[in-house]
Length: 393
Image 1 (cartoon, rainbow, N blue to C red):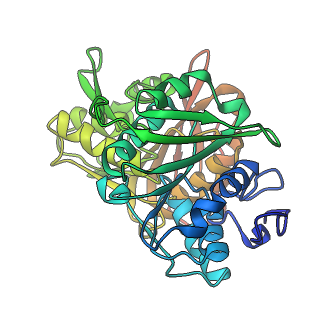
Image 2: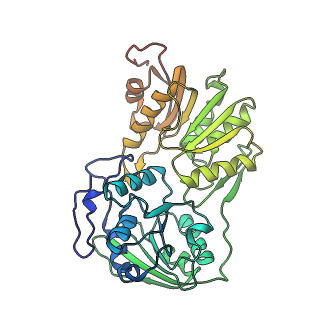
Image 3: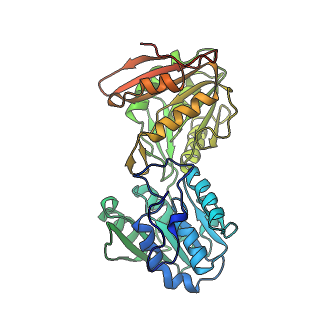
C-alpha cells in the first residue's frame, strides 16, 4: 500500500493505490514524485481537455489515469501499460476509487494516439522504448499535441533528450523536484524517420533471428545466462510434447527449444506486451510460428494447475528499477502450481542468488545441472505425490 495519502496541489488520494498483483513490499510504492510532477505540469491542459483526447503511456499502477479521471472528470482516457500486472492493478485501483469505465487499456499502436491532444507519459529508462513511443506520438497524435512527461533523475540522460529532439521541435525540461524531473514536448516532426520496430538481429552462433520492440528487456541481444541455459536443451524432459518459456522476453529460449526439437510445442509467456509481440516476431522470422504460441500472462495465471511437462525460466532479479527477489519467488510458485507430477522446471540464475533452497521448497527436489563462473542452472522436479518437497544435492 502506498504510504502517502492526498497530495497537496493535486487533490487525488494516492493512498487508494495498490501494486497488487505486482510484488508488494515496504520499499516498493504504487506512485512516486514523477507521477505528481506530470499531473501538476498537465493540470491546466487536463482541465480543458475533452473526452477522448487524452492518452496515458507508462502509467505503472494507475496514478496518472485515475487522478486525471477523478480530479478533472475526464472519461474516454486511452491507456497503455506494457506490464499486465500494471493493467490488472489499474483495474483494481479504479474499482476501489469508483472510477471504473473512465478509461480503456489499449495496445501500443496507432489507435492509442490517434488525434490525441494531451499525452501523459511516465518515461521509461530504455532509449529504444522512448523512440518507439515517441514515433507513435509524432505520427498519430494531433499536430498540436502537448506531451507531459517525467522520470526519476537517476534514470534520465541527455541521450533521452536527443532521441526526443529528433521527433519533436520543442523539448523543454523543467525543474527537478524530489529526485524527479519533468519534460514537456510539443511540435511533432512529421518528417522524422519512420519507426524501425521491431528491430531484428541475426545471431550466427545460434542460427537465430531475434526481434525486439522498444520495451523488451535486453532488446535483440542474447542474455548471457540464457546462453548458458541453452546448452542444457538436450537434457530437458526429452519426452515432453509441450514446453512453457516463462518470461519469454525476445523469444530466445522459445525459438531455440523449437529449433532443437521440431516436434515440441512451445508456449512463450510474458507479462510484457512488448515481449509477447517480440517473441511472436522472433517465431515468424525463424519460420517457427507453427510451433510457438506467444501469450501475455502474469505468472501463469491463465494456465491450469498440473498441466505442464516442462517449464524453462531465466527469472528477472528486479521489479521495475528496484533489485528485488520477490518476482523470482512469485514465478517459482507459479511454476510449482502449473507443473504436472514429474514435470521439470529448468532455471538459470546468478550464482550469488542461491535460489536452490527456495526451488526445492517451492517446486520439488532440485539439483544443480551446471555451473560456471557467473551462473547456476538447476532442474526441479514436481513430486509425484503430495509429500513435502525435498532437496537433492
